[in-house]
Length: 224
Length: 207
Image (tube, rainbow over all chains, first blue to last red; front, side):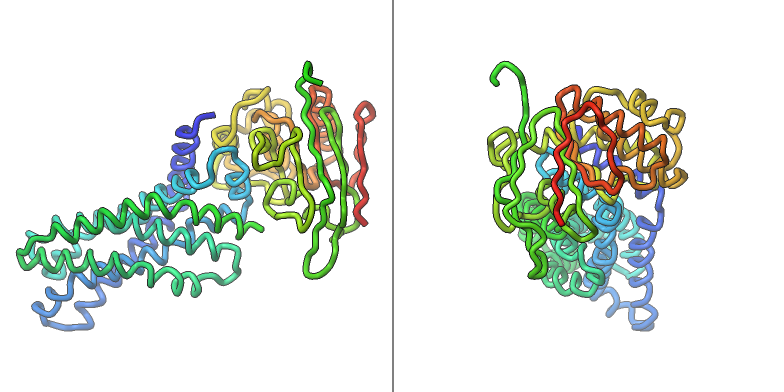
């Protein structure tokens, strides 16, 4: 009965499930690509404007894609009773919840990282800022999953939690958006971005440590 | 008492109030190894609520639950119990084997291996079948197989006989008798009358 075995078993189970219901991976990714492609169409032939707002476009789209994917984090487990079994496990719920969040990020966050450079080039973002864009996404998207998990855990018991979820979670995403967007902006202007990256690392570490507990507590409330 | 490893589950003065309606009040029971507690009562009388209180999903409005003389929170309770409720806690996109392996990873391994347990509940040969291809009765037997593969003392079962046929019911009853004979205990709700001749069955009628 080891905790690490349970941790990796939960991750593996969720990855297998995601592979068997492919829409869970595909939907947020397609949404991300689609929203980003809409901007050049809407703005028209103004490459400089597009280049200037590219970091914002990519990050806001990533935020919305993460939002869209959140509901799948606990929904099916709640509906079929697997969540009850996770809560009844002698292992700490917060660790098992963290495993679910990690799996969720691997399924919905990581694919964004893979397509983002392509979309960045498409928006005319200078090549030397691509590295920083990827770095901010690597540090920022896990935070989106971690913070979002609290919101989903609170609303999973509600029939129509979707709207409340976005009202609850989007304001909490603002710090990530500010620092990540700003870092990419500065990098495309050739300026140093150490401060922003350090703050993003700090936010990630704090979220990693602090969010699993309230998520576990909120799940206990929701199951009641 | 010290020589034999007996367990006890005690409810002291439990009440449950739901939407201003008192479901039960000042409920007292004590269950020791080898006994079965059968909750009876009509629909909506609070049987499932009591089970959910025992599992810790709900707080009782008054009263306390003790496991081996200690409050549930400070005891080994969650390592010693297993719950099969209305929802069977089984993923339909996973195979039978994957589901059981997951249950095993969340708990510690018990008396039977997965293969033995599947044979016991007449599901051997279904290892690699996706659960969505199973019938309702087979799903129920699969969720009950969880009782056998994990190490536990207390079974909490909410209507375990739902969607089982006569043989399935007899099978579960024999597994329950075997569990009690080896020192386990069971709390269950059931519409069926259970047939456990050699077991000490306590009954609580909630209505």
